[in-house]
Length: 53
Image (cartoon, rainbow, N blue to C red):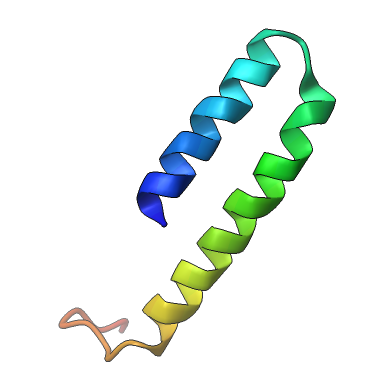
């Protein structure tokens, strides 16, 4: 998913540079969905060695 998001971000930047901002929306939604999924997995993983105090 990180590689997919890398490609999505490149597409988003390309469209923005061409002034085609509306075309970016679908790629932004997919990237957002990927990030939410990755965050959910990170939250569900065992606690890291650093503890919040």
